[in-house]
Length: 65
Image 1 (cartoon, rainbow, N blue to C red):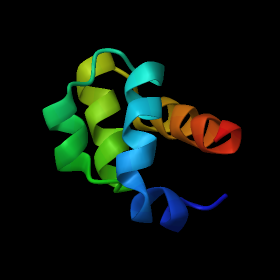
Image 2 (image 1 turned 90 degrees about the horizontal axis):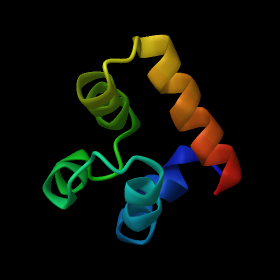
Image 3 (image 1 turned 45 degrees about the horizontal axis):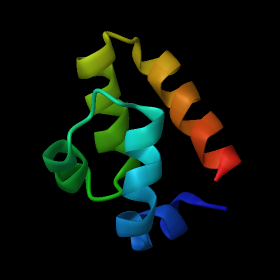
Image 4 (image 1 turned 30 degrees about the vertical axis):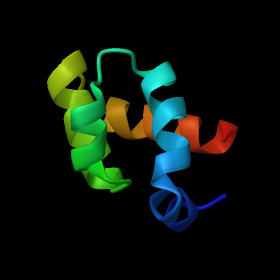
């Protein structure tokens, strides 16, 4: 699966993202709207991660979905 598919079907994947990252709220995930860069930035902010670590988590999540 590629990120364009995630972005295009964000409403379906939003719940999976929230299950993966429980600190993210519905409103925050709505603002992300499937944009990978926005999701990575939000993970950095909420979880105190470095950019590389957040990108790795998003890539791992993408591979599982």
